[in-house]
Length: 313
Ligand code: SF4
Ligand code: SF4
Ligand code: SF4
Image (cartoon, rainbow, N blue to C red):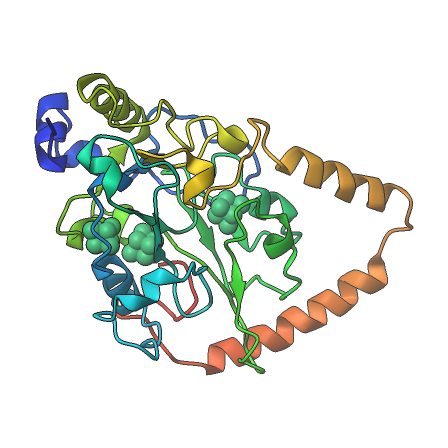
């Protein structure tokens, strides 16, 4: 028994207006976003067939380079991959550790990964210049104009998501899934959710997605493990997952419920407490930002959706 994405929102009384994004905050925040209206995606890994259409459309929407091997090549799924500066999302294949008697257990699990858009993101907390922000609609977005390339966000992320363009000597950017921010803020869909032929991803208000996840578990006894990944991990994430196997066996880290930003902030505050006002450091950082800003303004590459490449689409 299953319920399609469109059917679910019809049943829940969530129309297109309700799917529209919330107003954008103008400032960075490391505070948790707990609004019932924030948006998310529920990924039902039991439906995924590993076709890689989501990877392909994401690359197209964001103007990322084509991979060496085409998106039709499915043998790449045999090796576990990570997101990098050329791919905001990857699908991996995991063979069941313990084959059960039910047919659904006799197939591998395919799992799509991308930024989890944490409620209380450690990348946002770690960024000393506010280049990463948690928007009120749930997306964690990146502003290349503010980034000084310190890569604290990469160290801080518990999911090891942000990637860095090491090959780009002049204007390297941090790269990660944007939650298709420029689309969802105007009521659109994330490209990956839109294109998926199996409707693996359900996009909507997070509170409705949690209801849907619980509905699926209740009405499909034995199909899912009793765990919605992202409901509580690191304080909750905008992307949520259902699976038929324990999450630690399909590529997910075992994480506590406490958000890492509190630790990050404590370290940063501790460091600054024992140093004199770092005026010289600010001067250097300001100079770096001016130079990188100048170079970025000179760079006119654009994404397909018209936003500047590496900006916050
Ligand atoms: S498009 Fe959908 S079915 Fe295909 S790999 Fe991505 S999530 Fe899985
Ligand atoms: S998964 Fe990592 S990069 Fe994404 S919001 Fe969370 S801390 Fe930031
Ligand atoms: S939400 Fe957008 S940026 Fe993120 S993986 Fe999907 S298509 Fe790519």
